[in-house]
Image (cartoon, rainbow over all chains, first blue to last red; front, top):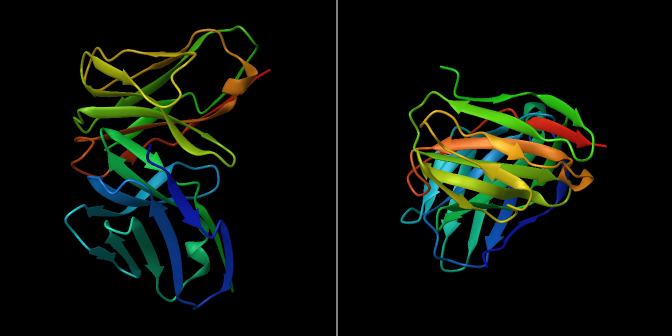
Length: 110
Length: 113
């Protein structure tokens, strides 16, 4: 059974810091891995999608990497801003289902 | 472009009542799914559909029914609400489970008393 773990569960940093959020999964037979952002009381917004054949994806200040063989992905946020405060979720896609981690709650203070 | 629309946004039920959570998408996506989100548990898949007329169970299907008569709509029915079904429910859609980004609705916050 696929299990997805995210570390740390919560993170509080000053504005301007570079951050790394971690995601690990137990079954490497995945189609893709997605990183989502969730603001309090809101739905999920997809940030980055990495196909199983890819090693990384970039969007603006965000960079996500994928190492299938070790079952790990990282989300790198450069030059963090207070507007980045949210919960970040990773999810792996295999056998028709998305399996989510429990998220990292990020607070960036001015 | 409305994306994925869920109604209602909030609902309070009494134990034993039934109701239907609505989900509609206007992106012509084949794949639709329902999740529930509980504190400390992450999102868990309830039911999903890979196309009109095809549905399957996810991780936590008990107490819920679904049907998919059209590509656009994927309603979730609670047959006899229980306090354990108090949760936030999200509907999502995509072109396929292995082919791309999943788009989520804003959620339905359900309380069962």
